[in-house]
Image (cartoon, rainbow, N blue to C red; front, side):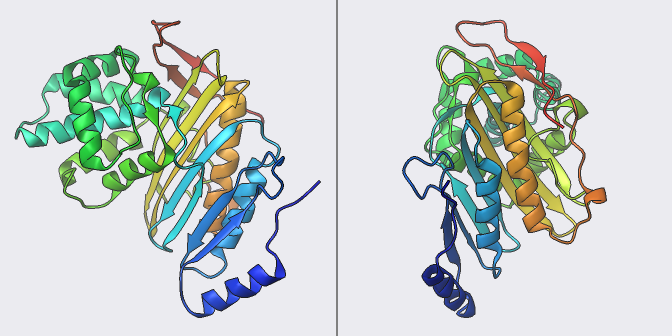
Length: 320
């Protein structure tokens, strides 16, 4: 079986570039056309980090049947990694973070504070992944406003779901990273108070839904997360997780989108394998005993779709 590695010539070029103090692109995976493992491309200003991340993310994805997209950006080390970052996926409940950002952006445009109803709905939508709350806010905003926010945010590859089916919004890892970036750094799209409000809710997601990208995160990091999953006749289970990790020297955002999973558990396991590799490489000195603990029985809402308009809450038990 073929394995991905850096050739002697590539290693020499890598060392030369690092010595020159430049960002170094490293690409691993997908050597033969038949290889199931996708190409992982990383750049970093920190010596050796791009190669290590490329190697470890590739290993985390090796042999998995899901079609996975990954996007990572760490401001501290100026590190970026991508896998299928522009491929489109049904959003499932991950879009709820975009719904709230749209509401906050629209309110700022009209110089309006959130009403108590909006506070209640947005809290349920993010912390408990409540479908009814999401539907209410989606109807209130309308697709036109959602599209306007996406344009302002530069999320040009995100397409809102039609017919009120917000869970069928088409998203990419690249665009989800743009949203996470807007939430975690000062910008002209979302005010400081809006960013603080949304991140605050993402920090308070109920424990059973704090799986996915937080797996393996250092306990010293502040974890902000939003997940989603959805099963359909084609592409099986879509299982997604977006996360921001800040505070105490941590400053990075991570998106992992998957589809073609046979089960929810398969998708959760894939995401958490990638997440653990990323957190380990970005925080090499953190002891295992000081890592964030994910729930043993993950839970998440399944959004309404035409073939199952009611939606429901489901749990999965990933492998130990």
